[in-house]
Structure formats: C-alpha cells, structure tokens
Length: 171
Image (cartoon, rainbow, N blue to C red):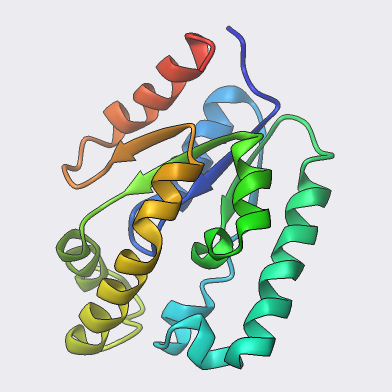
C-alpha cells in the first residue's frame, strides 16, 4: 500500500471530519492532529465577520504557517479548520498533499447538530451560517482535495474504506 505520510481532512462543521480522521489514524497507526479551530461555528458568524478583513488575512496566513509545519510531520491524519481553503496559498499547500474533502449537504449538517450534546446555535442561525459557508467553500474544497467523500448517507465504515481504498490504489 502506497500510503501518504500525511492526510489532511477538509470540510464543514458536522460533516464528520473528526470522526473519520480519528478512525483513519487508528487504522493506519498514525497520529491524529486536530487543527480545526471551529471558530465560526462556535461564535455563529462567518470568519470575516468575526475577525474583519485584516484579521481574516492574518488568520489565514497563520493557518498556512501551521500547514507548513505539519508538512514536516510523517504518519499523521490532520483535521483542518473549515476556513483553511479561503486563501489560495493554503489551497496550494493542500493540493500538494493527500487531502480528503468530507462533504455533506447543509440539511445533513443541521440534522447532525440536532444530536450534538452541546447545541451551538439555533437552527435558523445554523442554516444561514452553514449555507454561507457551503456556498463560499464547496468549490474550493473540491478543487483542493485529492478525494471527495459524500457523507450525506451515514455509511461511516464505507466512507473510511473509500479513503483507504483510494490510498491503496496510489491516489
């Protein structure tokens, strides 16, 4: 099996990035690293609204430095912050690595948050925020990722196996 040394997991909150990443790390005997700050969903606003334009640019460049440092590690599965794809430089870094877009429709994301032990936002605000995030980022995720896995249907084992199969075929 031609396993990449680093796997970067991309996607929106609620898509299943963390669960899939942890499972992959365990199956590959890799270290799991959570680089997903989840700032937007915790606060309930788009990152640009939270930080302002200059703050957003600094934040995204900081994420780029984190990615550069993580590229020095081997045998890791890394979840990324949902906003990481907003900066072209970050997308380029991720395109040079093995990255997986864990994709789910907004309705699926909202449904999954209904079962969250810590409700973050009311459904109306959730839908508005997630709609905006999806519209702004879906194309970037798809253009950046080595593989896209649609998690709307909850076949968790199949999602993980899809990634493992793709890796074993040499990407």
